[in-house]
Length: 85
Image 1 (tube, rainbow, N blue to C red):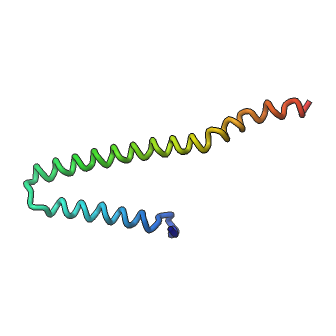
Image 2: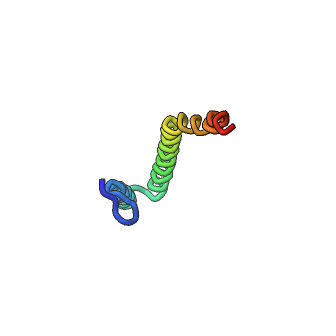
Image 3: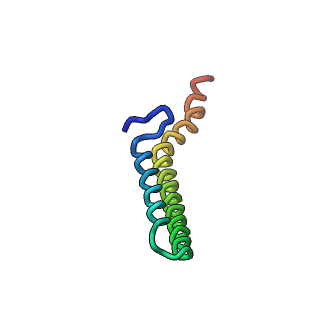
């Protein structure tokens, strides 16, 4: 998707709107205040857990892509050392 000047894609705006809509729906739901707060706290914990999962997945993917390259870069000075002499 195309990004605007701020680097936010249309999908990002869609997800932000989705989250705000869900929050508004929960706040206007016919529940007691305590139940609503409990639901919000549960949703926040679930969102934090999901964010942590996504961060870990990103680290794993970055390691899979960058790991072999990093090993090559670390080995590079040792490989060219005999040529310098």
